[in-house]
Image (cartoon, rainbow, N blue to C red; front, side, top):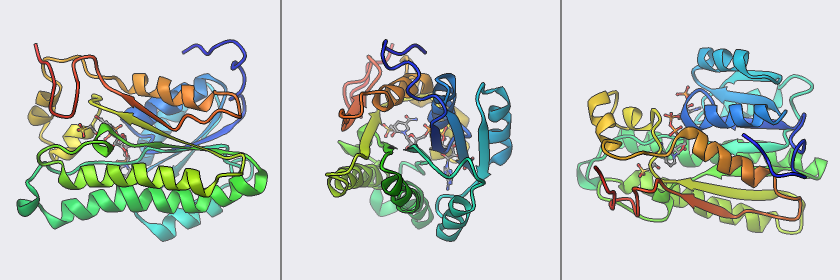
Length: 259
Ligand code: NDP
Ligand code: 8X3
């Protein structure tokens, strides 16, 4: 991945904290930032995946097993980071999931709670513990992964879309609350990206997951990582507020042109 002249080297030795780095967009972002010389702090529940990824990245990595829905664990893990890893420069709130595509009146409470706990409360817990240190140090960038589902709602998307609308509101709120400080706040909102997202949504039904991307060329995790990298490499006075990206074959959540 190449950067525009002038931006080369700006990420060297920066500490980038990527939540949900064990798969998909998070893993691609870890790789992209590492490729620019950043040190990568990675978190997810599947620590063995993080360790495998860390081994093939060119810069220093530190892996932490973390469930973002567990408030105490979030506080404990972040506050006890080893020296050299505490001064987080960029926080990428990426960990997230969808569960089911049921109509709201037929939905499962456990699915709702998992989405709300991960996508909304998890993002809040992490942000709350990381941002004060950024303020003390006088610099930092929070980049949240939202979704096109944070801009529109689709049938069966009810609770997932609500969580991503919440991510958008929280990003805007944080930007306002940090006004007058040097901290930056960005939101990246992808449409259809082929990752493990749909396998998780359909509780392991790989056939149903594959059908989501059938007949189109979806975005790749790397496509999203390039946009995240762009946000992170603007001059310090520039704040990218929100980027929406979709595959060329998609015009809205429900308007998809399949071959
Ligand atoms: P993946 O399922 O491939 O990756 C999800 C990541 O989130 C995994 O690394 C997973 O790690 C992590 N995660 C989930 N729950 C937790 C938790 N409780 N604690 C810590 N980590 C957790 O999906 P994507 O890469 O597609 O998803 C990444 C983000 O992108 C999500 O926020 C998703 O909503 C968003 N998004 C995805 C789109 C898509 O079409 N794929 C489009 C728009 C947005 P582990 O299971 O090891 O904990
Ligand atoms: C993931 C994209 O369209 O499945 O956020 O909601 S979509």
